[in-house]
Structures are given as C-alpha cells and as structure tokens.
Image (cartoon, rainbow, N blue to C red; front, side):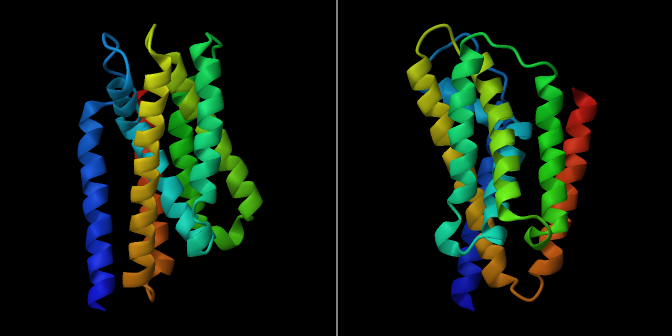
Length: 200
C-alpha cells in the first residue's frame, strides 16, 4: 500500500512540474534558436494537455509493457509533420484543430478504452501528433532546426512519461475507483479543450 501511495505521489509531482512549465507557453522564443527553444515549445497548455492525455490513455488501453505504443505513435507523426511545417507547408485552422484534439482526448478518456478499439485510438493519437508537430515545425527558427527538433522531442517524451506515470499511479493507488476517476479527468480535459478553442 505504501509503495502504491509513493508511486502516486511521484506521478502527481511530475504532473505538477509539467504544469508549472506551461507558463513558458508554446509560442514564445522566436528570437533564439536551438534545443532550449524546441524544449519550451511543447509547454504551452494546448500541447501539454494533449501529451499528458496520450500517456494517461496509454496506461488505460494497454498493459504496462506496451504503454509506449501511444507516445511512439504521437512522436513519430509529430516528427514527420514537424519537417513538413518547417518546410513551409501550411495547414489551415491549425490552432483550432489542436484545441479540438484536446477535446477529443478528453472524450476518449470519458468513454474509456473498452469502447474505442486500440487501432482506432492509435490513429487518433497519430493525427493529433501530426497537428502538434506541424505547429512546432511552422514556428521553427530560421537556423538550428536539428537542435530545435531534438528539444521538442525530448520535452514531448517527458510529458508523455508524466502522463504514463500518472496513469500507472492511478491504476495502482485507485484500483477500485479508476473507472470513475479517469472519466472525470477526461471531462476536465474536454472542458479545458473547449476553453482553449474559445481563446483561439
């Protein structure tokens, strides 16, 4: 029991640290280049919520040894889309679509993995990764794209990991109540997505 509580505390501590990072915002730092700018870019609230949701969803949909599937699908699609965005390809209403992806992740968590096939969930995660990666690429600095890309990949991986740890902590500490805790988190995520959509 103590181990479960310790795991949950560490997970929530990581989530809190990630949330504090959102103060950096996703769309700042255009005057500098390199790794740090890339690392700061996913810390805007829209990106942060989506990436945490992917990690959380993955712990609900797959056994512990396979939770990497969701983050891997997101990051792979994000990198390809980042290259397209940096090449000057434009995607209409990108910010609106990113906010909608947060709402969609909230709905996924509310419905639960039993009502959404894992393959379809991976497709949704990959599409969301594409949108977020396109935004990263579109705002890439004029020089130093490689370091910038490494930065947003590392930051994204950390956010996914935080979501996974939160999900695993909930699964262990709240085994008997996770069936309503996760949907509640999903509802909050959906509300946050709607709020973000209203601000675009």
